[in-house]
Length: 377
Image (cartoon, rainbow, N blue to C red; front, side, top):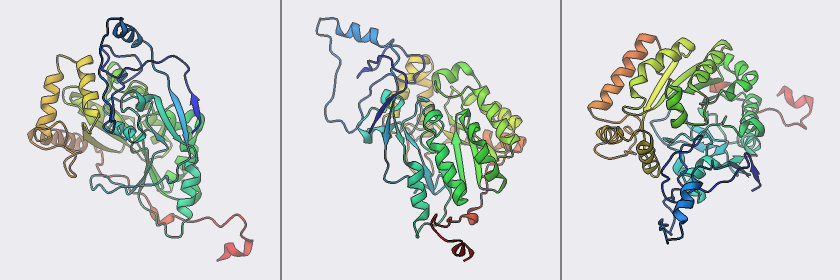
């Protein structure tokens, strides 16, 4: 791997929870991942090292991008809760820093922290387009519903320069392969020249995630993602270009963004969204301590109440990973949320089904060295 510094500035992340949040980061906690064999404990030996570490918290950790040559780019989905069969994530880790991100624990497989490392150690699959082309050319490949950016955002800041996602969409266009895409970034507008013509042929749809309309909440909940107002403008631009666009009001966090559910749906519909879906907060693995620490930092007076409601929807646990309930929760409060969502979408005329895309147009282009006669058959 080749390391590319994005923002050269000092960093001293801590192995124990920092007292104060750092602007522009969801977490600066170097939380140990679940596969680590050694456990680190903070201990002041009298030399003032803990005080020095506390001062270091004020330094914003810098971001580096690690280039990876992936062997495979398509990931299969075995969950009945998700409406696609294959996914492509051009990046591992995400600089947006959303504290609730269910993909944070995947950094553990890289022996990196799901905390600050997830936001600052971004792995870029620089050969994604080549690997996708090879997968599509394989004789046994059959087109399936495919989504881009299901785990980490395909339009996070590194994409501005690396353009990996654009290369992936170019391959989609080359093979007439239908795809959906989900993002929090206005960067998707850059690729409208590719997406819009495909959308007109029922080969592309875009979903924009809007978690809150409150810019102050967005700055601490998802600190490096586009502002809520900017995301609404992105929905408008996509809709005006003829791209089927939906809104994801996810995750719904009790007593944090949950009161805004109907207003978010209304704003998205007014901006041009035609479909909507919503997922309740999930706290798998290391996301749980990270999120609870975030709650104590930003909403200490509400933290116990939020977690009590989360447990109400998770059969008394902090998390429920079972298919069928992990996205929606269970119990009275989960049912009330679903009723509110269903009532609002019916009133607004928002379709709750995924966009219908046409997989039948998939084709393999003729090899570059094929003669003109070969293209007739």
